[in-house]
Length: 87
Image (tube, rainbow, N blue to C red; front, side):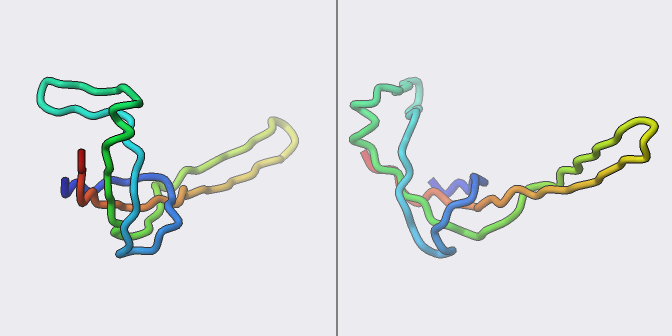
């Protein structure tokens, strides 16, 4: 709890809470991945802020034709803070 994670874009506004679906639970030396047991667990997170990922540069080039194209992309991401894990 209290961890700040960067995930793909979430439509929830900053300051609001939402629930996450657990996929794997590690408790000490016990690892749980059974869907029936994970359905009983509730993970709550709060949106800290919306951010963007690192800049990715895309270059296209064709030899002997003078064709060059430069394009960039930044993936929208969201910072979330895990507030509660209830069994």
